[in-house]
Length: 198
Image (tube, helix red, strand yellow):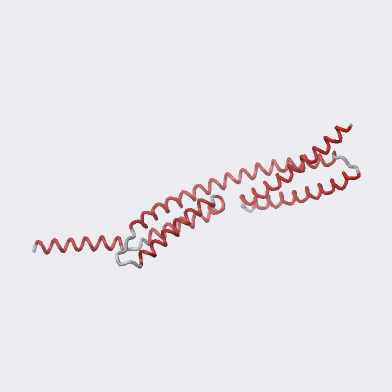
């Protein structure tokens, strides 16, 4: 009787263990997916693209493993469950980091806007001082067209900033600053050559 009772407990313990190991950790899957979605909502895929992709890849790998286990007679979801715990923590941290990065980029855009506006004001002054010989007039007209295009890019960047698209604004402003710097160098060189001849 005692032996039968012990065997019964052993069978019950095995059944509980087997059931827990053989059950899809759906709650953890849902929690991890929700955390990844929340990270995407704060634009982690924009501001921390490689980190976001890494978390998504980890989730895809876990889900592939879960699907593989489903087809087995003795299902083992323990390793997937542990990985899901790690993904949940990573996704939550990613959200925090993305918010911080977005704020950092926002400030960078503000500083770069001021810097680019100042550079363009200097270029406008240099344009008035630039030599206007036969060839100079055509070159200056071309530079003026380029400056108008840069100003249009800066205006686009400012609109993006207003709409909260800070990364797009940063990329536009960096391109505008590079172009404005080249023109600044070109104008300064032209003015220096004229002064040198005198």
